[in-house]
Image (cartoon, rainbow, N blue to C red; front, side):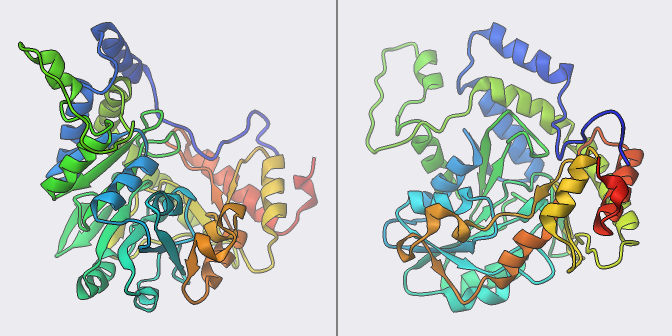
Length: 394
């Protein structure tokens, strides 16, 4: 079995002449670094998620770093999070000199298990860093109940969750409103909104937002836009050590176009996910991802749990032979060489579900340019791969 023409990638950004024209406009303006386009992108993103403040940065990793610093995470502190996430989640904790404390994910999903959090809390716990994995909202309501009970700050790693929604007090609200103290987003090419790379922080706290803006530009007290627009000589000062975490106007201009088309992007992804779910339900032992009643995913990725008998690598290879690209389940940071040793992290209880999910799930292609025939082809190829059909081998 072969699609006969091309390889189906796991993901593909939605870009056309609209983004080209946006970049052209900025290039011809003469202002290409952090400036008026970034400011407008921040305003439009804040309006989209209904957040009082939004601050653009160079990527989501830098966003996480600034968010953790703002809520007071520092050397000697602990941050409760998941190992079952891209390594940047834990890395941001270590950038602060703090220790990531890993708790397990839920048995029937890929998000943090709220029931595991209390046992991980110590006198050193400063924050909870929860992840909306693959665009699926985690159970924020339960996480925030625990955090409020123990006086702990909560940062949302919403890298994958632009446009995802959660049912909150009877109303559907977008991730990033924010519901916790700070939410952090990614605009990497595999995300539903891309600026090539880039990130955004949203918060209701004006003090946090001011801190983000200061630290993203070396701690410079007078922004470039203010200095260049001043009719009198003005000098900035650097009262604390900051970082070069700025977003360019080129990126922001592209992001503004992407944000305009986001509703159609999400609608398309949700249609494809629904078709996947319908077709995959016929495969014995395979478990498609499912939305809780209180969540609406943007379906940034479509990750399925394989039947117990399936060999993950074998299935992925046979799909690749058929022209279907896949990725393994979400990584576990504690299994990587950079996190070996007790000094690098702490594990609360066990991570059985996290480890099993990494080795027994795969991400199937999902992007706007796909059509129903692509989905049917992928599902047929997967079904044959699971029964080790010889016709898949070329």
